[in-house]
Image (cartoon, rainbow, N blue to C red; front, side):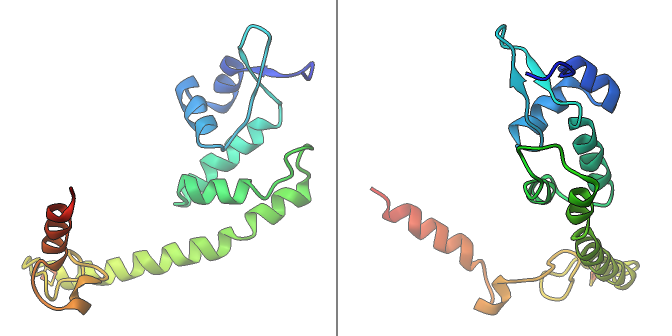
Length: 154
Ligand code: FES
């Protein structure tokens, strides 16, 4: 174990996060720790940069799954270099651009819906965005299908 390994409390304090959040991130594979002989968590010092990345990525709207995918591209056996971090951050541009496009579509929907208030299942994209079921025709097809599947079970 590295001499300068940090305790969970030290990492929480330095990163401004709770220890519960650190455990949650570790469960999700965003960070890794080693264990002492007394089964206490120890984190490498460079985990602070990973946590800063997670916080920044969440602020731009990335999900934890997306963040995990990006972090998985970092080398796991060495301390990531500046170039490694630059490579991880590169896909942000497209992800952020996609988020912006989604928000712009939502804003357009809001503009259309403010003052309308119908929340129509057939024409309101705010309440029924990307209506996949509409391609199969009217009615509660998916509910009926689920009920039929439930009846067929032994
Ligand atoms: S609320 Fe009427 S179209 Fe969205």
